[in-house]
Length: 423
Ligand code: FES
Ligand SMILES: [Fe+2]
Image 1 (spheres, helix red, strand yellow):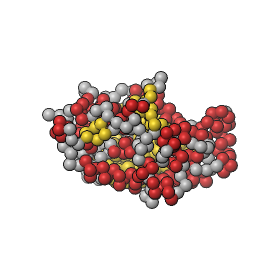
Image 2 (spheres, protein in one colour):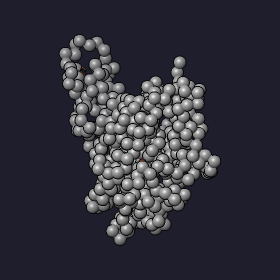
Image 3 (cartoon, helix red, strand yellow):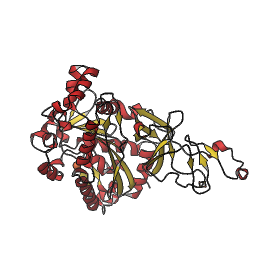
Image 4 (cartoon, helix red, strand yellow):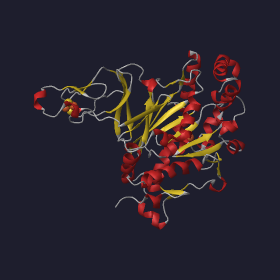
């Protein structure tokens, strides 16, 4: 018998067994990562024809490649003959992919180009190509796919809020273009993948888990997230469809706080925004900065960092991040963005290691819980904080104090919808 998700995901709590149950994990990989829309990468990572990167979408390894007609294709990283992985590196440039087992050769579009001793086959060549994502759509260079082609349009998944969050980031670049080709740093964590959307959008823990950062560095997180009045002004927002934000905007005490710099240091950048959008909206953008938001199920827009959540198994995942770079700014400006990313979430930083240890402690705490305990009222995780003080605006977005679990509930609400959808 399958899992009764309706019993295990409630409005104010979820059952901890969902964070380690192998059957739940298998259901999620199918329903969320194969049947639904997932983020793959950014077009700036594959600028030239033949450029490719490998990515993990749930349990599926894929190759995102720039074809010779300039289009982007997402192919299974799996030879259609006997399954050998084709690409072992994280990125490269090729005019074709060749399998190392029996040397089948595939074009950048995934079609078979050459088979050694082909007279052994009477199957038409067209039937022997690589599996490819059935649907692919992009927005501002962000590439999303639906592997099996069964989802509706991307617009239904992202909704107006999903597009607005991506736009809010990209519009900060003077040309409107961002570049994510600096490379990705991966942290392998012994935790369930769902703990990351939860912690990336949890405003409650910041002052505790990240206290050492606050004490030793001069960070704007003291203003927007760490405690007292800060969490009163910032907002936890649930836009629906599992897209959630910690909206820092009401807490910033000055323009460009999110860049940790004063205006006189980046005057030409500010002028470029003004020239493009006019004074009023440029001045507002300099206050607002980029979003701190999670787009369901695997894309974290972490201000000037982009992170991908890659599930590995019920108790293991990879958190992969890169620095946002802007087009149309000086080298110094982009170097600053890179340094800021390293300081915030790089290997020698505070945030990722603090969050990774916390996620592993949660995993240790919940790993013995059993699904059957739900009936005995044991093994629940409470997500009720702030339920009584949420507000709903005219677009249907729910928001509350940034320390409230409105964001976490938003993630699980979408999870429940997907896991109980009739397919
Ligand atoms: S497995 Fe790839 S060519 Fe045989
Ligand atoms: Fe954190």
